[in-house]
Image (tube, rainbow, N blue to C red; front, side):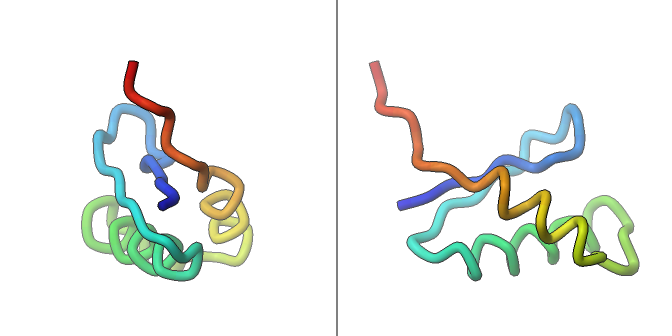
Length: 59
């Protein structure tokens, strides 16, 4: 399982999926619906991909 946290400072939104493509799709939808982005540019997609990571184990 991989996870992603929104790249907008202060936004608590996050998502998890086994697939990077699904995380990118959800993040792009979130940017459009919540943050008013009308176009998610390729540079933004690359920033999303760069922030996808494995969850940290609970301590």
